[in-house]
Length: 177
Image: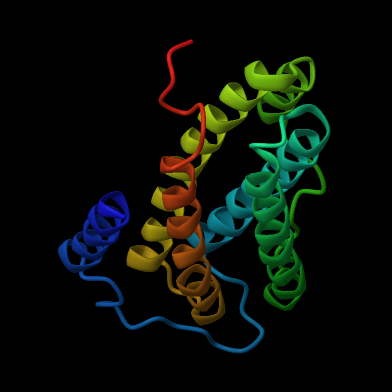
């Protein structure tokens, strides 16, 4: 629980330090978002797709200890992906339909593991990806201009923080290899 409070405090300081929402977001109807917002949407889509794929593999290759985490990750990321996919066409953003080669290599590597070896690699990968995602979403909250994408980031960031807290308490994450 201590980790959760530290994480939430860190995110709050990021907002305050970066003057979150200090700029006046612009969202004229029919105007595509700026390139920063578009990049956010595309990166968020890729991250979400990768999380779903990894979690589906975890349900097949991981131990019983990891399955509740994988189920939660799959459900939450699938829901966020769905919201983003519904939003993107209204913003004239074409989202990627699959993960790039770099993420696919990670997925392929993990799909060859099983049991506790898979669990450790899966959890380590999730920690890294959630670090990256949290920074991506905080940056959008600090610098984004599109109101709908800001709302998506604002509603999804607490879920990323919850995942982070879940991962900090996960089995095997801090165990010796």
